[in-house]
Length: 175
Image 1 (spheres, one colour):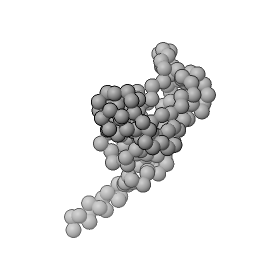
Image 2: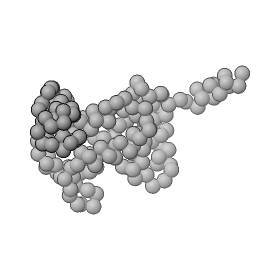
Image 3: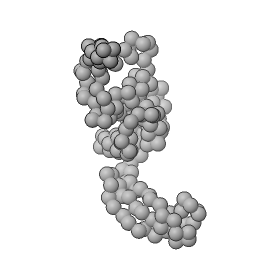
């Protein structure tokens, strides 16, 4: 393992433990003495993603993670929540046991997981994934969330307020 501090290849494992779908190893560089952490996970097999235009490309955890991180940007999420979400999604994809998975299936797996994590991130991701063509389609999704037709928000996120609750709050502030 190459040391991220000095670039040397010699290191020793100081600590090792199982985490989620892999192994976390704490390493110490034998050259400079710096400590760093590595994560290992087993890749069952390569999955090809079938795009909307018919192209196929290898599944990239980093590419999906980037899209999810953009949707979650500047949201008050607990540390590690996105990585845990990615582990859940990746596990679900490998459990399908298919060599090729349409991108729509991946989106369908991501959407409910994001909705459980954060409503705003869900709406951001949905606006790209569902390719809303007008504000009306986006408004329908937001209205469903506001009416509580979808699952409850996570405990670290405030509930969406009804119009009556907002008006009541405003009236209390004016007094």
